[in-house]
Image (cartoon, rainbow, N blue to C red; front, side, top):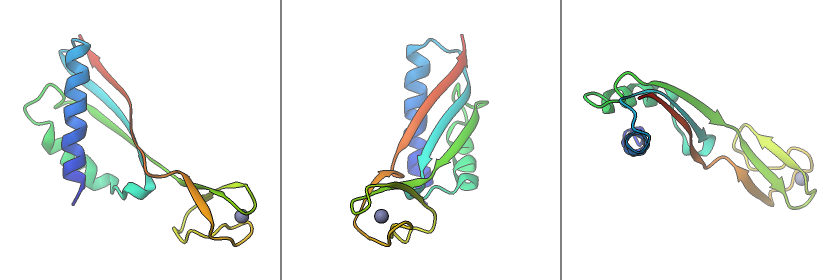
Length: 114
Ligand SMILES: [Zn+2]
């Protein structure tokens, strides 16, 4: 369950931002994960809830979005979204693909009250 490790890292970032912004409490955390990170949103929500206990982020609402996997096909030069993780260009069948989205962990924004 790598969600726990990621949730702890995220909490570290959240608390750092909260401190530099002088937040008394964190109200909302907006985060995006590429599909390749293989986050299960339900699990992530529950481990995050556990991780924030006793911190100023304990009431924070977690807004989690999964980003689709996207590739540029080196053969037909088109960018496509791939759903089934087969890594074959649905437009021309080539498997010479370069991933352009899908592995990222983005802390989009952190909201809080001062
Ligand atoms: Zn192609």
